[in-house]
Length: 287
Image 1 (cartoon, rainbow, N blue to C red):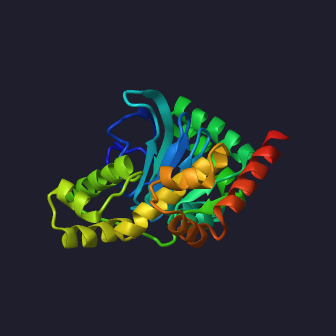
Image 2 (cartoon, rainbow, N blue to C red):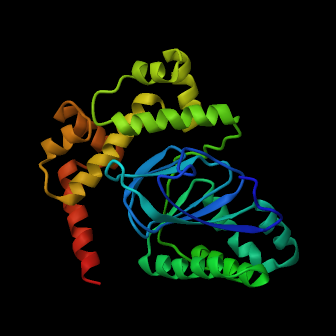
């Protein structure tokens, strides 16, 4: 992503599907607001869910992707609002304006990926991003720093990746990993052996296993299980299906394995997670 054309910050919008929607990384920070649709977010070794008004910040060379769960052939015209900016902008600014040093903790956290949780902060951020979209020059830069100050002041956030998974791989490796993630996403709800994905990519299983872990920070089986658990959380929060139905619909083939994996990753049983999800939804509807 080197098309800054001498500008300090870049604003983009795009829909889904779109060539920009792929597993990738770049040297810029990325502030990413979901405008429409729901789906799966991948940041470093993290897999989770996104919905309209989800707001994320990713650091330099941290792999990320957002895949919408839509009907076949469905097009989302305007799904994303993005602001990209580089380290150089803030490093240079720090040398001149001491006030910018207050942003350093935010940028350090971004190395792991951040999801902002406060609805008020997200609403204000959305307005500020629109001002960035509608302005140019120094005015745009002013709106940008107001936006970063807003986010730096927020203490309602979640760090995403368990480790700093920073990459500088070549384009071929990026494309190969992107194809693997896309294939897994399309087929994880059924039994999906590593050998099948390796064959799809034209790679030997042992080599694919090593390359995949280097790229995603997770071994193949763990990556698939995390994706399935993320799907099960989505289904449990909906509240309509039994735990057994959720187990099989999310790709697990027996309930005991599902319960064990869920407990390992979420620290609670599926039933407990559902109760908490319903409680959170009820509380949100009160405000």
